[in-house]
Amino acid sequence: MLLGLALASMGLATLDAYTQHLRYARALALQFVSPLYFVAEAPYMLGNSLSKNLSSRENLLAQLEQQRQHLLTLSHTAQRYQTLKADNDRMRALLGSKEKLPGSVLIAEIVSVRSTPSAHHVIIDKGSEDGLQVGQAVLDAAGLFGQLIEVSGSTSRVLLLIDKDHAVPVQITRNGARSIAGGTGSRDSLVLENVPVSMDILVGDLLETSGLGGRFPVGYPVAEVTSVALDETSVFAEVKVRPLAQTNQSRFLLVVFTAEQARAARLEGGS
Amino acid sequence: MNPLVLLSLGIVAATLSVARLPADWYGWMGLWQPQWLLLLLMYWALGVGSRLGVLWAWLCGGFVDVLLGEPLGLNGVVFASITYLLLRFRERFAMYGAIQQALIVFIVVMLAQLFRGFSLNFFANQDWNLLPLTTAVSSALLWPYVYRLLRALEPRRGLR
Image (cartoon, rainbow over all chains, first blue to last red; front, top):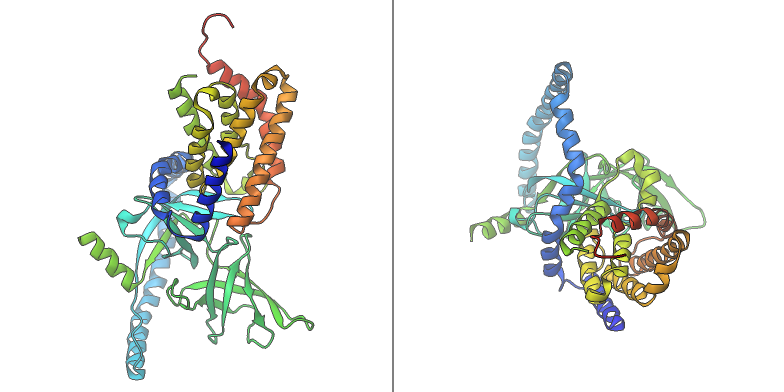
């Protein structure tokens, strides 16, 4: 009996880890257990709403003022963005290349965090009912946060970009040099894999998604280079980068729909 | 034990196992989280385990896999093995004193966590860490209290 169950488990785990066949069963079970996440998170939600209700008037006013100023700066950037985008589209049209279609985003709230020293997941409160699909990119206010790896009806699991299992194709914003940023399991560093010593990369360079591989949309900020070590005996430079996303502070996340995904979600919702 | 009580205890244990620690505690307390589900499972196996058996333990493990985002079947086989072992050595375990029981709990939890660590390393590319040792220590320290608490929840029938 025990042996049979052990064999069944091994079979299941293999199927689960290397194929997609069990995705539906997992999604169903996740839907079933997801209330537990909300219960487990309840103390934080309660605390948040308490501090929201009890914070003083001066505090709120100060916060409002700060946000107003922030909004002003942002709207200034947005105005410039419009002209820049129009410019950019014209240039691209001149070059004959396809226009970069802007995606839409959906705001989701984190309802549970699972962090062991090597695994970093969070659960968010949106699922396939909101049109989410496995593989979509997830952002927070500062940069790329992770991607969806499991989607049930009303909740989904996000794999953080700092997880050891995660890697994202990136390019340097300054010169377009490409690499891959892999998670290390630690919150404040990613590692750039196989960077040749000849690559033009400097401390302070910004990395953004390159869109290669087709999973992440192009152009979202990912990380900042914190150290470049050139070892004469190696053909690769050791580059450490710091993720921009606030992986232990963000409460609200943005799930990105590329234009195609948004269209697919709309079609699904309509049918 | 009343199945409804057991189910709600299971829900409490599962909730505790996904509950998040405040960020500034995480560094030192994250490692020491007791394995509530394993403790409850061990108590259950000592009590009514003979009526429901390893298959049920395995099925419950499947839900825990999904809850924790681990490869399907991993916690199933851990749960089933623990249930099997405790069913096999139930009488002897019941004779032991609190310290001896806690020692057994330490060994069982550590083996379970080692097995999980190995499987996660194999299937999900996760690093080894200190969790098997630390969670086994905290679980073993809590066992006598958990045992007494669950015992107190037990309905009293006739002479005991």
